[in-house]
Image (tube, rainbow, N blue to C red; front, side):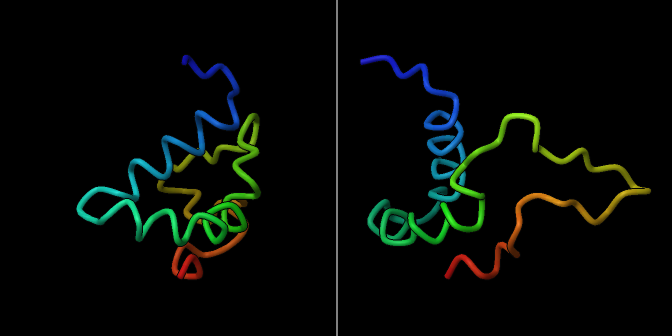
Length: 68
């Protein structure tokens, strides 16, 4: 079934990227931590633009090392 919800698609994208080289059970066990780190995957208008002059982004709200 196709998914059209931007928040859910963004969550899938992040989790898929995090899964590379890890088991899905590991990623899914940390899913709640990813949701907290990425502000419940509420991305529209919040994605950071990384430039050499701007190394500190306001989003995600937590360090990725806090994911667990």
